Length: 555
View 1 (tube, rainbow, N blue to C red):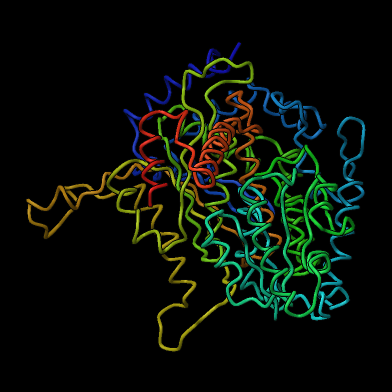
View 2: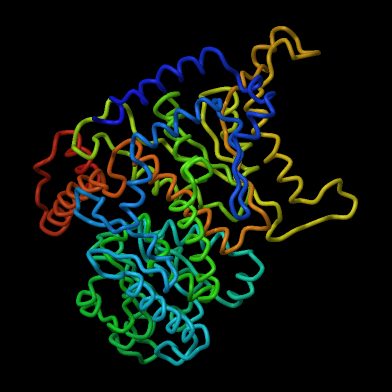
């Protein structure tokens, strides 16, 4: 029986109708006992979900649904290394990437944690050599600038962590004198931006591609190889030496990396049980981050992620933060009909967090069929977007308050990475920021009715009324954002996505929707090559695409 045919699902459908017709958050929030029950804490993280359009009965029904969906068993199957990615016949074991060396995890009878720590030791040894100057460029100069080439999961996750720690005091001190940039887009402007102002003699390039065939990544890799070779040739460096000293790889395709000119001992591997969007804790993220911040920082980041992994697999469901977040996602999306979710970190350091989770969640759960290939009678997955507060307040909050209903995730920290407390100001800069963190969820929940408006002309009252009843959760972290809490935050949202997919009964670990565009792009690429080089006519496309191609080729 599919999950949507169960009595538990049907009861929630009826319950959602009742909630929408008979409740308002302004009233629900007056129930202090309910508010206390709709909160949870774990290791420095406080989750308040009392501003959800939900009662304690709603939570009871959602946990019943989780039991019916065999959520606990599905999570255990993932941790046991079962091939839960059924369409690709693969295990899903990103939790092994941050498991301590003394906590084995197995895939097909092999303790993969041993493999993980072999790679981590190699990364630490190499990053230490680069950072201390034991590994230098072809002209003997220290490699102080790094450009990491990758796309999708090979870029968004590492960039999120890099930005998150850029002004964290310990990480900032560890990165003093170093530069890290990312190159993802095949647009040549992105390559120009990545190398602008960099000295090739001081630059190390990392090519991140599991197969070493990703079209965009490999074209960018060849572009930067050309830049390095031509620039260093002026210093008397051969092409082979330029590549061997200034380019390394993160890939499972060592022979292809070696054929590219990279020293095989400078290729750091990962495995087919690591999905791209779940790979930031693999060499994909740890190589650039360890070179920039040092391996002690990346170890702390991995420890934070492992902390939440352990919580996911051992905590009771009713106090399990990623499980609660996942079930509320199912409630808002499948039962209340909200198609979107806003991630609103009140921390400028998390400016790339929403972009990363956008991929994690939308590529994972943007599916139309269940595990058996049966079309879903509901739409799975939400449209994720976000922006740090308070910037977002002056951008899209207007819609959130008075337009569509958008469930919101407010993320805040009790301390700032870079505190400022000006003499004569009523509050510190961080307190000013957090004043908005606390105020916005209440404004969304309570709203303001026409009857509550005073000294407002009647003609303006409809424009100044706020309906309220707009759901949100608040995640408040103790202390300031650091490597450990960044790891916790990452794992919370990774597992939230896994929980939602498990309840919906879909495969959260394949991405066939990405493939069709790649196939068609190859056809277009071949046409452009033929037309540019031998004036071949455009053919094999529909008339709309043919017109666009001819227009493009004529300019």
